[in-house]
Image 1 (tube, helix red, strand yellow):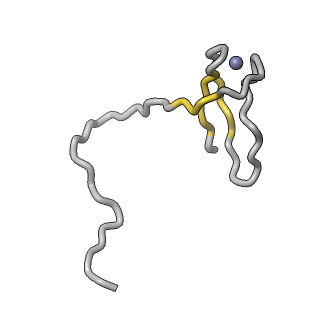
Image 2 (cartoon, rainbow, N blue to C red; image 1 turned 60 degrees about the horizontal axis):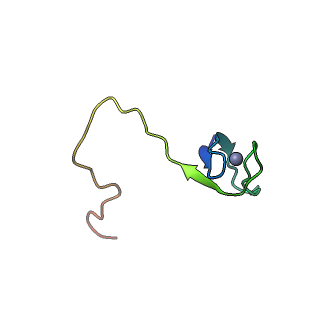
Length: 63
Ligand SMILES: [Zn+2]
């Protein structure tokens, strides 16, 4: 499920919000009710570290 983390810009409360495709409800802080919420990016736990990135869906050949 696409659960995103949001942080309130008023009280600083961090809460998770389940984002659905169709349903789009306004984002409000569940603590203070402020609309000044920003999407919080969480770090992904990666076991191996790779410096170079591999191009996905590379245009090989023709069509
Ligand atoms: Zn708040």
